[in-house]
Image (tube, rainbow, N blue to C red):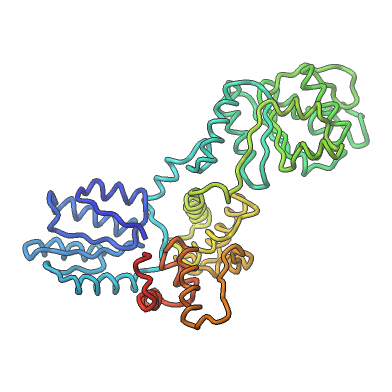
Amino acid sequence: MSLSYEKSLEKVADRFERDTFDLMLFSSSVTDLNPDDALEIIELICAKCPSTLILFFAHPGTLKIAHQALRAGIYHYSALPVSDEELKLLIETAVDRKPQVGVNLLLQSEVEKNTFESMIGRSTAMQNVYQQIRQAAATDIPVLISGETGTGKELAALAIHELSERTNEPYVPVHIGSLPTDLVASELFGHERGAFSGATSMRKGCFEVADGGTVFMDEIATIDEKMQVSLLRLLETNEYCRIGSQNQIPVDVRIIAASNADLTTEISNGSFREDLYYRLDVLHITMPPLRERHGDLHLLVDHFTQLSCSTFQKYIRGMSPGFISCLESYPWPGNVRELKNVIQRAVITSTGDILERKELPPRISKFRNEDVKVVVRVGMTLEEVEKEIIARTLEHTSQNRTQASDILGISRRSLYNKMRKFNMLSKK
């Protein structure tokens, strides 16, 4: 749960554009409070942040605005003054009744602010990638992009092309791994009529089509020895021959290659030429896996949710803490591509306007981080075991009681009572 205190309405709006809050205490006793401005902020938060419950505290002379706030959608209002005991009860009741929602639509602006050439991320790892892309775009040298499947290697290649001086020339992607081995040469270099069985007409290859522009070759590690030699010659001479021809064709292309395999290992295995590797690896960009992009998961989830809602004409206003907890715990071996597919599936299969844990595939909904362990020693009482489990669960959720109660299968009020019983409230 995020905590904040602001006296300026402008700062309130700014905070909601950067964070999500479970509860908002709004007091008419705050100085410099213009009633019309206050109501405008309340209406904005009620409309765009349905996960936030608003408790409005009003002086007798400001009850009119409290009534207007009620119509706008606040949870409750109370006349000032309010005793500490009454305030505590109001907050506990509000938290227990809080809708299980995790989306703040004002955060969509965060997606826009953290988008770079179709890539979304504000993590340090991605900021480093953006800087390398800018450096690559300022030159015309070959680039090798490495990274696990689904990390966005093709997006990085396209960004380099779009930011370079070749941006108005063709960009031709070739997914070599998806092509039959005997068709790779024809796809890249083209062929003459009659060059082989089925070649009924001349066909231009990707390099000829992309003349003046960029060729992106994905899964470069899958090309065979003969193709490696042909590609090396093109890099050295800027010329090539179509299959079935001896005529050299000059070409001006920028080559960007990508691989999810470690090419140095492939060289050691004898399956990839070392000289070709050094020709391609003039500038190397490594795309970080999603599990190392700290702070990017929620941005991507928000983006893919809105994108899926628009595509499939669905309305999703939030996500349950259990849904979010599963996403945060899962290591995402398929990276951003896997996350996109999971969110798309969840939106399609959802029967309500809140995404629940049941909308996630079993590999995610049932995943448990094996690094999180609870040590139970012989001689511990059941209460000591229970306290240890609660402590480790709170530690796992960064002290988020809503997520912890969902994982433990108890209500937030029950968790609060147990924490009070075990003298753990000071840890919140």
